[in-house]
Image: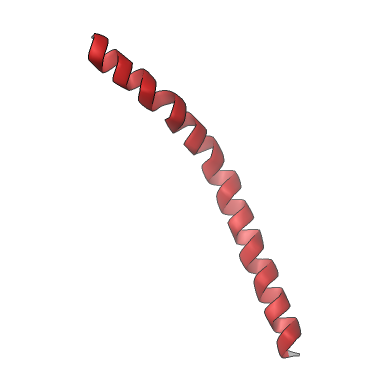
Length: 45
């Protein structure tokens, strides 16, 4: 039973990590696009 509980625990952890990555990935892409643009605008403007 304990090994099965550990298996469920790891499935839950992996699921949470997957959700975390899916939620953060678009934000990371937006930041990667926005930061250089804002820096260029700040330097040029």
